[in-house]
Image (cartoon, rainbow, N blue to C red; front, side):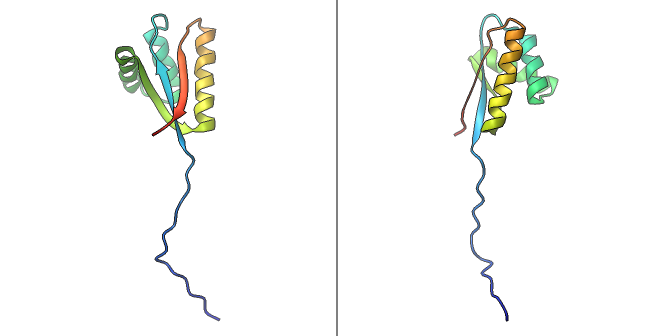
Length: 98
């Protein structure tokens, strides 16, 4: 018995929605600390961490990365915990990516 398959069918692959991890500028958190957490928790190179830190400083905020919800939430919590342990008020949020 032969079976025929329609290979021209469109296949829709579902992917998990992405969330932005957003850093906000403040007047207390040091530039060096922001670079450190971007490298530690977001796997940024020194060059890309410095560039993003400058963007955050000059524009008021910047996106550290796009991740599935659970990963974005974990990275946000790691960053906030680290900031509080270092006595910095760094604000980090997540929101759905466009």
